[in-house]
Amino acid sequence: MPGAVSAGSGPGRPVCVLCRVKRPAVAPRRAAALAAFVLDAERVPRGMGVTIVLAGDAAVRRCNRRYLARDNPTDVISFAAADAPGATRDEATVGDVIISAAQAARYGRAHGIAADEELERYVIHGVLHCLGYDDTAAEAKRAMFRRQEALLKHWRAKQAGAHARACR
Image (cartoon, rainbow, N blue to C red; front, side, top):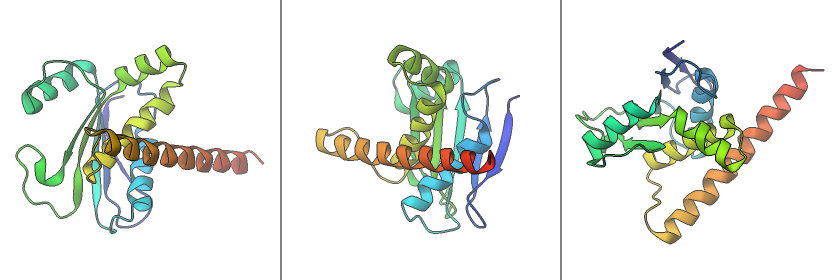
């Protein structure tokens, strides 16, 4: 059911996930925990968080057109706090991330990747953009991709370990 959830990896990590789709591949609480995990891994000070929106293609396309002057759907749109549309200097956020849940599912199907893994990749990618990572120049793109994939691997291993402990 579409709605909002706030979660984090502990006290002082404000992460908000707004779910605007009926069945995202990743539960909003898990997306929030993942975003908090990335912020912790990147050593972002406690008290700093991020907002994530899990949206449909039409909403992502509207944002892409309105804020980036690109009239096409995309997978992830990120706004670092200082660059966010209508931004006021909110010291508690690194930015906003808008993710197309449908794009994650489509890309995953086309490339043999589970939809939840691809959506988790988009969460990490968007948060890294908010933290200043860039994927426009070739070398920066390679560095961002390496960091993104390392974080995804670590996150998924951590989740698998937690699941295994819970099943004992």
